[in-house]
Image (cartoon, rainbow, N blue to C red; front, side):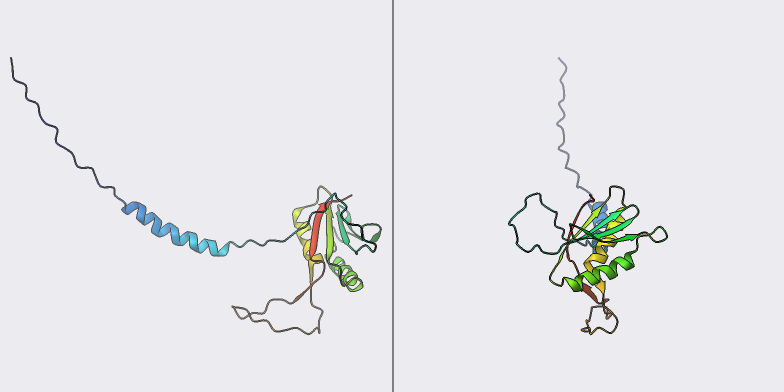
Length: 173
């Protein structure tokens, strides 16, 4: 019988993982992500949604401004009666007149902070943001006393006054 030679299998050493490529990727990717994270800022506006529950009944109801944005213009209301109607001017919403009227209402009701912005279904989102900005704050009138504010870059931010800061949004009736 022929003799069979059994060759012993030589144990192969496990190959080393080459991490150089992965490390190069991380060296480039991590600083890139850190740099871009600085430029992405999120602004949050707190909104309160109207509830269906009545809550406690007040004997003197607080003034609540309602701005109803429609296809053909805007209406200012106190929830019960229309205060003013602002038609579109040259196809655009008259935000300047809205700002003046909101300032007048704030002078008449200085303690009120509540406002609702109600939209018809086909109104663009950009118009909602513009109306909310006008209702929430206004630039200081000329000649008003201001406190100098220093910022990191040395420029003073534009001075604004708060108007109706508690804003709710909803569908127009």
